[in-house]
Length: 367
Ligand code: SF4
Image 1 (cartoon, helix red, strand yellow):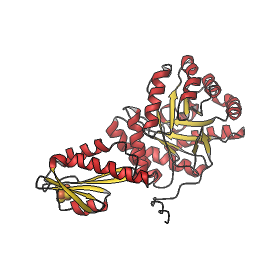
Image 2 (image 1 turned 90 degrees about the vertical axis):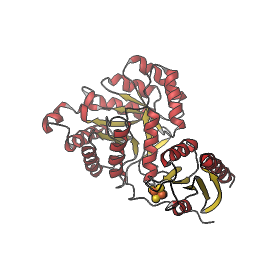
Image 3 (image 1 turned 60 degrees about the horizontal axis):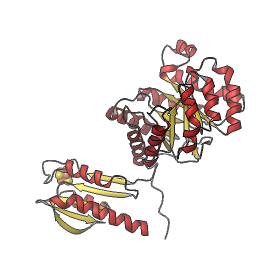
């Protein structure tokens, strides 16, 4: 039959030049990628590779590792070789580790010129080494480490200051004919961050790495990142994203993926359409929704599962979903594609939904 039309998005992607981070394309010709950063000491190669494996399994496209010392730099070749996804080395202060990371076979290197003294003098060599090894670069401007001259000029990390710094650093690479870089202009305030990226997006065709820096613990960080990324992505701005949370990195990937799925920028997988519950609810909707979510976590097929507390909106929503339950009178009506297939006692709702989801997944796998 006819291929299904792609789901609608809010705006076309901003056109950018295209770069590669190892096997992953970054730019408007590629899907938006999701990144995280390991929290293990990079010198602990096994723990770091273990965390990278967990991140890969949770849908991470690109992983960044910190490289603050010579011992970390020494661990990079094995990590870069054994990681299932491209590895970016994160370098502050010491240009010698930029060269070490490039030599180590890292897919990309993140440099923060504000934290590398005499950065200007080193750009030519960095560009040459990166070009020789097919390594791309992220110019990572950060509100907390602006170059002293720019900080002095603006007094603080305004959007203009972040953008001026980024554009200047980009020009240093471009002067040497090096174009394989993306840019980030991170700030912990989503309003300043959004303004900075909007301004930067007008000034060149660089791929942009979105991030709200130091966004906070999981709840606040999730909201800050979702609002800021949502504002930018809904206007087509952003080519790769990293949600920063004071929480395990796998949580960052879950949030990043969910943001992209919510905007139809990545295919939706499991979607729980659960009601907020109200005085009409005839079942504990919170627990039911949580149990269904936990039971179906990791489903790889697109599946909308409706969990409704009563029969007011229940059958309607359940009909729109692939699978659903509408509760009432201590029982659950189980819907599959709009048809009530059975009615089960409340205690069997969760297991029945999981069973049916698995059956649908199997059918889709066979189709
Ligand atoms: Fe309330 Fe029923 Fe709507 Fe849930 S589905 S919010 S219980 S009316």
